[in-house]
Amino acid sequence: MRATPRSVGPIAVVGALGVVFGDIGTSPLYALDAVLRTAPDESRAVVYGATSTVIWLMICVVGILYVRLLLREDNHGDGGLLALLTLVRRDRRTSVRARSALTVLGMVGAAAFLGDSLITPGISVLSAVEGLELAAPGLTGFVVPLAVCVLVALFLVQRRGTQAIGRWFGPVMICWFALSAGVGLAAIVRHPDALVALSPHWAVLYFAQHPHAAFISLGAAVLAVTGAEALYADMGHFGRRAVTRAWMLVVMPALLLTYLGQAAVLARGPVTGSAFYALVPTWLALPAVVVATAATVIASQAVISGTFTVVHQAGRLRLLPPAHGKLRGPGVYLPVVNWLLLPGVILLVVGFGSSAALASAYGLAVTITITVTSLLLVVRLARSRRRAALLIAVAVLCLVLTVLAANLPKVRTGGWLPLLVTAVLATVMYAWWTGRARVRAATRALALPIGAVAEQVRGRGDGLVRPDGTAVFLGHDLQRAPLAVRMQLENERSLHRQVVILCGRTLDRPAAGTDSTPVVDASGADVGVWVVRVSIGYDDVFRPRQVLASASLLDPSLPSAVGATYVLSEARVAPVSQGVLSRARWRVYRLLDRFTSHPADLLDVPDATTMIVGRRIRVR
Image (cartoon, rainbow, N blue to C red; front, top):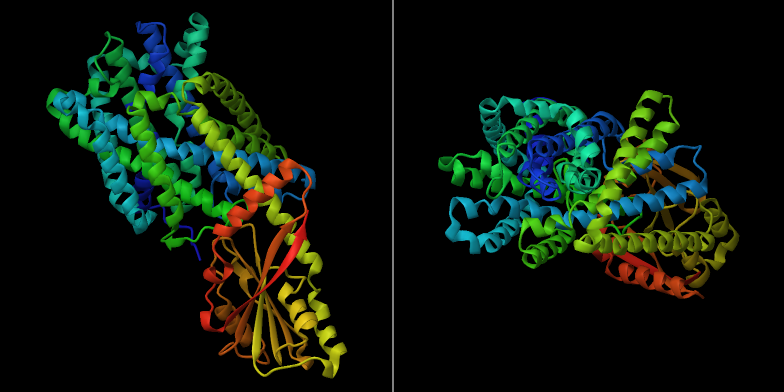
C-alpha cells in the first residue's frame, strides 16, 4: 500500500526539489529566449515587458493556481488532474451526464499531459547541452548525440524509484538554484534598474504598445510554467507542505533572480546565444553547462515520474488498461511506460535537432492540460463555499484561456505533433473506458446475485456434483457473483464442497484505510458457500490469500485457503456493432485488451491451483 509522506523536514523539501521542481526550475534556460524571439525588437521596454510577462504568468499559474489552490485539492494525499477529476465526480450533485462529460474532459487533459511528456525531456536536455556551443565551439556537432546519451541514462535509472532518485537529485537541484540565482543576482547588482521588471505595469505597457507581438509571446511564455502539472501529479510523493515550502523558500526566489538577471543583461543590448549563458562568466561556462545538464535531467525526471503517476491513476480508474507497476517508496515505476517513452523522446531529439525547433511544438499540449485542470477546479470550487478561491480560480482560468489561444498558431510550426498525440491517446482512453463499461454491464447482467448462489445450491440438491476441496471465486462486484459461478452451476452442474466468493471493490482513492477490513457473510455456510467482501484503494495491491487470512480471524468457520483452487472469470467480447465509428472503437478496445496483463498476473495467487473460466459475450 502506498503511504503519503508526512514529514516536512529538510529531507522531504530536498527530495521535492529533486523530483517535483526540475522542469519549472530549468525554464530560464529557454523561456525568455523563446519569448523574445517573437518580440518586435529588443529595446529596454520590450525586454522588461517580456520579463514581466514571464514572471507574472509564473506567479499566477504556478504560485497561485497550483501551489496555492490545487495542492489543497488532493484525493487522500494523491494529486494530479485525475485525482481532481475523481473529487469532482464524487460529488453527489453531479448528474450522470455531467459526470460523463467531465470524465471525457479529464481524458483530454491527461492525454495532453502524456503528449507533452514526450517533448519535455528532449527540450530540457538539449537546451542545457547546447551550452557546449559557447563553452567549446568545436563540440557543436556532439550536442545531439550527447543529449541522446544523457536521456538513455536517465531512463535506465528509473527502476530505482522516485524516492531514491530524489535523494540524489535534490542536492544537484540545490546547486542549480544556487548557480542560477547567483549569476542572476550578480547581474542585478551591476544593473539594479532591472528590478523594475517585477512590476506588472511593464507587461501592461508591452501589450498596449505591441498588442499582436505581446499576444503571440504568451504562447512562448507558457514555457516558464510547463512543469506545473507534473508538480501537482508528483505531490503525492512528498506531500503538500514539503512542495509548498520548496517553492516558497527556494524555487520562486531563485527563478525571480534568474529572470531579472537575464533582463539586466538583455536590456544593455543583444547577446550571442542563450540569455542564461550570457549571465555566466567565461571561467564558469563549462561547469555551468555540467550543472545545467544535470538539472535538465532532473527536469525530465519530474515529467517522467508524473507520467508514471498519471498512467497508474488512469489504469486504476479504468481510463486505461492497468499497467503492471512496481512500487518504489511513495512512487510507482511502470516499466512499459518507461520503455515506450524512451524511443519516442529520442526520435524527437534526433528529428528536431535543437531546443529552438522543439520549442515550436512545446507548450500547446501542456496549456491544454492546465486549461482542463483549471476548468475542473472551477467546477469543484463552484460547489463549495470558498467564493474568494472561486473568483481567483476564474480569473486565472481566463488568463490560461488567453495563453491557450496564443498557442494555437504553433499548430503550423510543430504544435500539430503534441495535438496528434493528444488526439490519439484521448481516443484510446475513450474507447477503453466506454468498452470496459459496456463489457462490465453485460457481464453483470449475466452473473447471479450473490445472495442467489446459496439458494441455487439448495434448490439443485443431489443434482449438483460437489467434489471435495475449496474453490475461491474472485470477482470485483459486491452484489453479483463472478460469472464463473453461474457457468459452473449451469454448464458443469458441479461446485466444490466449500465455496468462497471473494469480491474486491476498488475505491476511487489511493488507499482504503479502515474500509480494507473484510466482511464475511456466512448465511450460506449450511450449503458450503461463504461470501467475503473487501474494499481496496487504487494504489493498494489486492492479495486474496492475505484477505482470506484476515477474514478467517473474523469468522473461524471460513474454510482455509491452503490448497484452495482459485477461479477467475474471463469474458471474451463479441461486439454487435452497426456503425463505422462503433466498429473502430471496438477494434481499439480489443487490441488493448489483447496486450493487457491478465488479472491472474496481477494477483498473488499460485499458478498451479488457479483456473480461468471464460465465456463469449455479445456487447453492443
